[in-house]
Image (cartoon, rainbow, N blue to C red; front, side, top):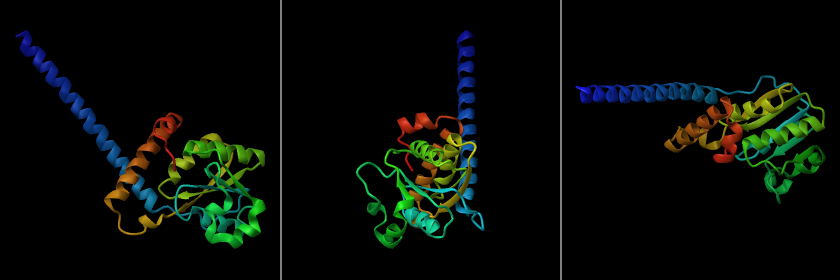
Length: 209
């Protein structure tokens, strides 16, 4: 009899554990669907308001070109390219925008210290404070924008952040299994930031953009 009770109790615990795992998986999946909708419908404000500065996060195609276009359109007087890495130069990122670089080089700052999204946020915060900025246009990939905005707003709670998402070329076509894996990974990283584990994730998972 005691052995049967022990088995029943053990089975009940396993069933509760399985239900909890399925429940968490269901919540993750529902949140992931909402994340996908937010990413694929992301658009910058229209019209895009002017700001004190532009922050472009390296790590994907077309981000720097988009930020340079904003600078040329006088949406902001200064541009930070965050996460450039040590030993890199402006021309390394902007070979196709030589004319813009020549004209606006004095308005562009290369950030060499950031290697993760959390590092981007710290770098952007230091730059914005040094220039007394109250508003920033954030340029990064659309799928990366939610996490980037969360990280930067945490470091600059009193600064207005204006998202200007860039759609990567790979996501302009039909979504592939590889793209879904990328988005699922990004969503999981975003969740770690939302629950306050961004700094830990940056160290353990190298959560770069």
